[in-house]
Amino acid sequence: METQVAPASIAVHASSSKGPRLAFVDNLRVFLTILVIAHHTMITYAGSGSWSYMEGREDLFTALVGRWFCSINQTYFMGLFLLISAYFVPGSYDRKGPGRFLLDRLVRLGIPLALYSWLLRPALVYLGTSMMDGTDLSFGSWLVGDYIRNAPILGGGPLWFIEALLLFSVAYILVRLVGRNKESAPAARPAFPSQGRILVFALLLSAATFVVRLVWPVGWNFLPLNLQLPYFAQYIAFFIVGLLAYRGNWLRLMQDRVGRRWLGAALVLTVLFPVLVLLNGATSDNTPFLGGWHWQSAFWSLTETFLCIAWSLGLIYLFRRFADRSSTLGAFLVRNAYGAYLIHEPVIVFMALGLIGLSLYPLLKFGIVALLGISLCFVLGAALRRLPYADRVL
Image 1 (cartoon, helix red, strand yellow):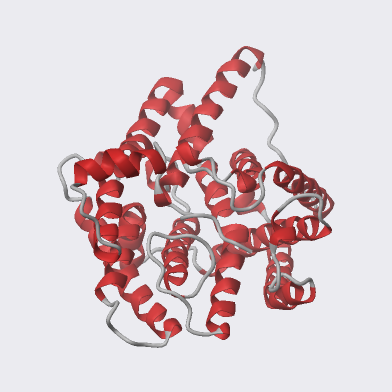
Image 2 (spheres, rainbow, N blue to C red; image 1 turned 135 degrees about the vertical axis):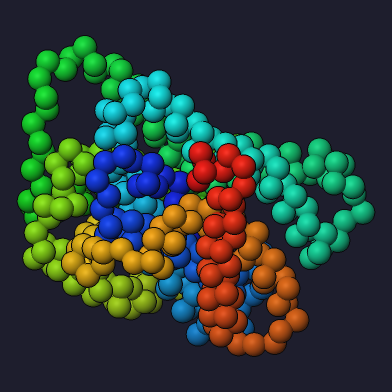
């Protein structure tokens, strides 16, 4: 499957919440941030999808490994990011009220979104174009004649996630304001859903994903805002699940046996994924999987949804069970994850361009650039936080 353009982000961070910290959630957010950076590095050398710079694939094995890695990530990591992000929304809103909550979202999400979309990314794309393809145009001429006509107004590159989260947050404010007069008593705490309800949710979400892709197949992008709507049934659903999870304290109350069961399902589906793809003919023509009235599209919508649910529940269990603690290194990574996400596109792109003359097997080169790039992103993220007023945003 083709992966979404520049998924990713750590746009909301638990540190903006003044309530008790959940160490395992902080650590899970760091893991997802690292995975996003690795995902985009893999696209550079071997994976499927679109990215600012791609070097090509050396052989079939490299392409298959890259496609497998990126496709599995795409099924769940942004949905889980949104679930975690939404988990901190109701408490923040309850403490601050609609006005302060909106201002906080505009500062933490809107400022990076505007600066990246209108300043950093145009410069990055121009430099990349100059280095790779060459251009006789000045930056101003290129910006007006090429970039503005063909680039998103907002949400360019990885910042689509911050943009989506800002839109979801505004929608949440509107829903709370509309329902304010109807609130006569505190809402009952929603119980953690039974296995039967999780399965029903999976089937309904699979059907919704299939229906959405009848209109917008995978790969379709609403260019002005850089939003790939084929994935938004999952994103909206998981954002709502995150809101419910906060009210019901689901991240703490989920039983270990539930997490273990879904983690096992995730591992089995991940291992079987290449077999399922090969048996259903996706290597020769993956078009029927991307959308439309095709059984392959229904199959992929179902598989993608179950992988998302399985990995989300499995990872929540794993981190709660084995990573519910902080450390000096962990605290550093948590503090700087947002900054690392914000700058990972230019870091990875320019590292790859700097190593373009290094002749190595693509997967080995991926490993080197990913290791160095992830480390550099967090170090530079820490440096960003030292800039004047940056602590208000980051």
